[in-house]
Structures are given as structure tokens and as C-alpha cells.
Image (cartoon, rainbow, N blue to C red; front, side, top):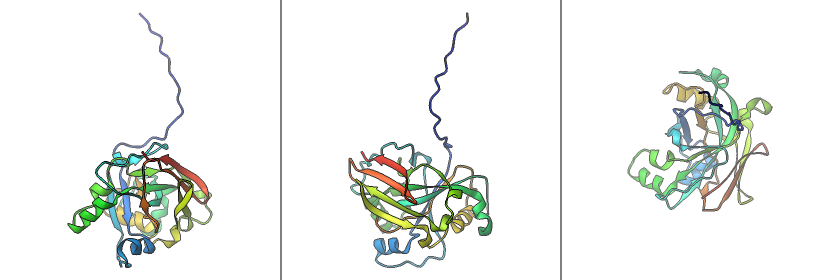
Amino acid sequence: MFHDFFVILRPKKEHYRTNMKIFGIGMNYAEHNKELHNSLLYMEEPVVFTKADSALLTDGRPFFIPAFTSRCDYETELCIRINHLGRSIPERFAHRYYDEVTVGIDFTARDLQQKLRQKGLPWDLCKGFDGSAVIGRWMPLARYAAGVQNLHFHLLRGGQRVQEGCTADMIFGVDRLVSFISQFFTLKTGDIIFTGTPAGVGPVSIDDHLEGYLEGEKVLEFNVK
């Protein structure tokens, strides 16, 4: 007996590895440091943390505020995506390992983070929870003549601009971050780096509508539930 099989073609969605690595960078903008600590912390090396692959939120899907936090803050950032395998990458060659950028939001359970800091504990629970790594549409870096260290981005909340930054203000530039992380982790195709947030972080509420812009173009949009 023969059976007919029909294939339904659907729009192609971007593929992400289920074992991908997501890296975050803490305190990489001076004004944000002052915003949270009332002083500028001097750092000789980047502050790196990781998020679980289940933290990734794409395609404009809604973000659900976790029940375990009473204050969940947006942190708008430039994100890069690694385009091939690399380990112990010299900084002068780091630019060869990424060619796409976007705007992302590193959601942070701020009240939980404060408790963890007070106890000297890691940030995994307040930074790496499900849905906490929201990313927008990937854009080819080649379209931006100014280069990765002169990109402007901002976030609208309910149509009002609430946060903005420029990568020129980073304490540690993108190439430095790629090189530094690769000394400890083998970077693989598809891994994502959130490069740090500027000043202006704040809490989200249910029914918020967030929009992220890169060089004036909307690349990120979703609702908070």
C-alpha cells in the first residue's frame, strides 16, 4: 500500500543551536557603573557571566516576568554573533570572528541580584533564567561604515525613549571581549555575546511594549507579559 505525503512549506526561521553559549558582560559602561554603584569601579579585565541556552528569546515572542522577582530590569545592549570556531584568539584578529550585530536585552532580576551580591554569590539565577536573553534581527556589520566601535542604539518603552548608548563608550571594546572570553571558552559558530549596557536601565511591567533600534533602524520588538 502506498501513501501520499504532503509537505507544508513554512517561512524559514533562524536556526539556533540548542547547546549554544550566551555570554554577558557586566559593568562595561562607566555611567552605568555609577548608576548602580555610585562610583566608577576600576577593572583590569572584563566581568563575564553566562546565560543558559533556554534564556534565548527570539522572533518577537513575548517576555514573561518571572514570579520570583519583584523588579525585573531591562538592560539594552549591542550583541554580536560568533561566525566560526576560535580559541585563544589574539585581539588583533578578533574582528574575523563575528560579522553580524543586533540589539538585545539582558533582563536582570534586580532584587535577586542585590541579595546574591550581598552574599558574594554568582549571578546565574538573576541573569540566566529562561527568556532573559532577548535578541533582535541580526544585521550584517559591513553595512555600518563607522565600524563596531561607533554604533548607536536605543530602547523605546511604550513609545518613549528610555535608554540609549554608543559602543564608543565601552570600557572594553568588542575585540577585547572576544579575545578575552576565548582564553577560557572555545567560541563556536552561533555563540552570542551581550557586550554590556549603558546607563538608563529600569524595570518592566506587564503590558509594556519594547522596541530596540540600531543606528535608527528597528531591529527588536516584543511585549512583556
